Image (tube, rainbow, N blue to C red; front, top):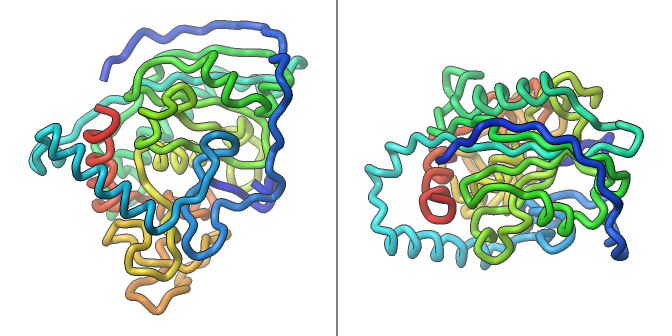
Length: 305
């Protein structure tokens, strides 16, 4: 999950556009957690959301997930050579959850620009040192709902189950207005609760949005990183386990802004402030690392392929 000070924060099908007005769900609305950061203590990781998919991940759970992932790859007979050859096009379904009065009804041009940002960021186009992850994105469909409750992310598990499209390989993106910049589910949770799988992104963080420092579309990049199985670069704080990626130096806490030369740990390396999985400003983000690309490829093969 990604927050800001301002917000407390593959088969490809033809694109479609639906305009649907639905009544708000009748059930009681779940409480929205106030002021919750993705980092709560040195052993916490990205929170996958609030509600059924909202939790911190301990170091013990990290290790258990790592063992489970290796076992799934062995069971599937996936080789390292196959992982390195990953070249996948991910279908993206965008769900515009606008208010009754049209607030949050982003344009088709903004959605197209967001897909372009995902493609550039995951291809490593922003820096000569960035990795090409092997993943690209295509818009598979857009639908629009005009519902105040859903716009404010209330009853999120219900509205996601009602609107989600595609299988484990399909990235569903719900554009909402909430206290966060974005929230994501992890790939290993798909088997348990696939109906809510995907990312929720503040609608005003898309290219052309009005959230200062967070309106270039990189919130979706960050959340998609979680969806592929990446932790924050500050996962676990200054520990050897950290985010389980060897080429992202450990950092004690998330970054604010773009503080060049920040070094918050005694372990080797400066803080990876330009990494998409930190909390830097959008214009500070430039890269995924080869290690993150490799982890994403392994997670894809284990849980989404």
